[in-house]
Image (cartoon, rainbow, N blue to C red; front, side, top):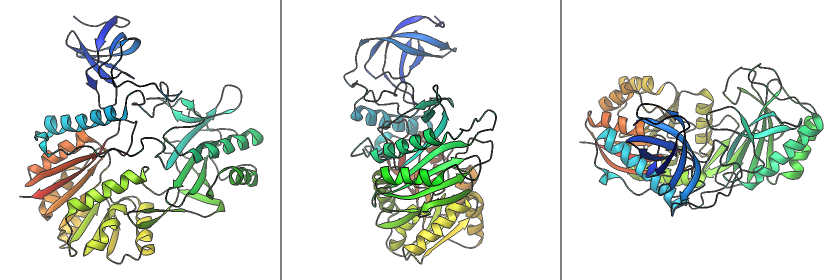
Length: 453
C-alpha cells in the first residue's frame, strides 16, 4: 500500500539516516523524519512520497525514546547546523558508529571487526574555532545574522550558537551594533547588489587570539575605525580585524583579497606541539582538540621509525604531514590551493622543519609526477574532500607501492568505496577508527590504516 501526501501514520523510529534524520518503515516503505529519535513512536504527517521512500514530519510524540532529551537551542528546528541536539551524546555517537559500520559492510564488503569504537569529544559544545555567518536583511530594518536553514539560503538569525565559543557571541554583538549605527547595506545574492556578505570569525584556542573578518562586495566598509573600537571593547583576545573582498556572484564565502585594518594579519594556534599561523584564507580544523586526537591516530597508523618518506596528498596547510615530520626522513606535501601551499611552507619554516617539501598540484597528477621522478614513499597520507579519491590516484598510489597508507575521511560512504578499490590493488584495511570531529552534526570523520600485502 502506497503512502500519500498529507496522510497521517503512526511510525516506530528504528535508526538514523546519514543526514541524521530518524527512519522507520510503514508498509515496507522507509519514512524519513527530521528531529526523530531511535526508539520514538510518532504520529507522522507525510510530506513527500516516492516509490520506495517518503518524508514526513512529527505531528505528535506518542512515546519518547529513552535517548531523547530536552532541546537546549531555540533555533534547532530551523537552523541547518545541528541534527542531534534532541538525543543524548552517547546515542549520537552510537548512530555515527553504526553509519560507518553499515557503509563498510554494505559498500566495501568488509567485516566490521576491523572497526574500532568512535573517539568521542570531551565536550560536544563550544568546540568550533571558526564561524562563517551570512548577513541579510531583517524584518524590522535590522540585519539578520546567523546560519542558513537546511537545504536553503534563508538566513536563520542566531544570537549565540552552542557549537561556538562564547567570545563569538560578543563579537557578533559588536558587529550588530556597528551595522545599526552605520546602516551598511547587505548583499543580495539574487541581484548581486549590496555590500556586506558575511561576518567571519576565528579563535586560536591555545593562545586565545581572535580574528574578526568582514566579507564585502567591494573594498571596505564605512567607518572602519568605529568597527575596530567596538570589537576591541567587547571581544577579549582580539588580535586582528580584516576586510575580505569578494566581488564574485558565487556561493564561495571568501574572496582572494584580504586587508588588515587593525592588528595582525594572522592569529597563531598550537596543534600537536607545532605553531600554526592562521589567516582568513587558511584551512584549519574547526575542532582543535579532536583534530589532535585524529592526527595522533594517523601518526600511530603511519608506524614511523625515523627514516621514512611520507607523501601527504591533499595536505592543505600541511598540518598532518608536519605533525609527523620529526619522526620521518622526508615529508612531501601536495595541495592544489596556492594559498594553502604557501601557508604550509610558512608553517614548516616557523616550526624549524627542514625535511618538508610542498607542491602546488592536483593530487593525482602530483602522485604520477613523483612516481616518474623516482620517489618511493614508505607511507602515503590521504585526506581527500568529501567525494573521496579519484580512482586514477588510487591506481598511481598502488603502483608506488608504499608499505602503508593512512586515509583520513570525512565521508564514510566514499571511504568504503575507496577501501574496496585499494583492496583490488593489494592493500588490506587493518583498522578503522571513527573520530567525532563535529558533535551534534551529521558529519563523521574516520582514520584508516591500510597495509600492503
